[in-house]
Image (cartoon, rainbow, N blue to C red; front, side, top):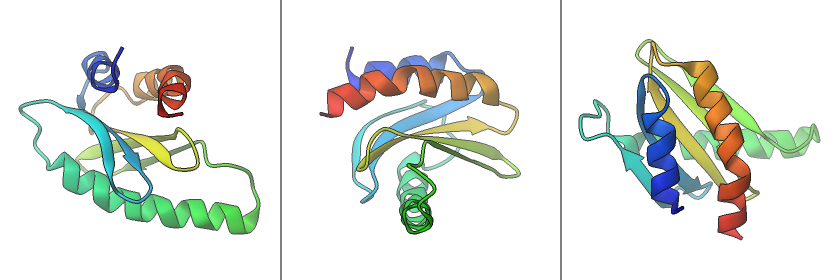
Length: 120
């Protein structure tokens, strides 16, 4: 299965899924799936969050608390779920505010090992 197919399946199988992106911490996207009716500019969101994630990752390294696995950000209109795939890449899932957060977390965790293997 290609990255795009995996991302499409994740977005399509979680209520409120808007889009998903595999991206490097440098802000360069590897692949994405975004619903046609997405109310946000997913590329812009992912790039901006990559900047934040890079700082979070650096802070975790300084504190020596272990590798980053997952992070979520909830705003008035969205939920962002991030799952680290490696030292260089992460997957970003955008849900609407009422989206199924638990299922989104589950799907990212379930699919992360396969995406990690494909990135090697």
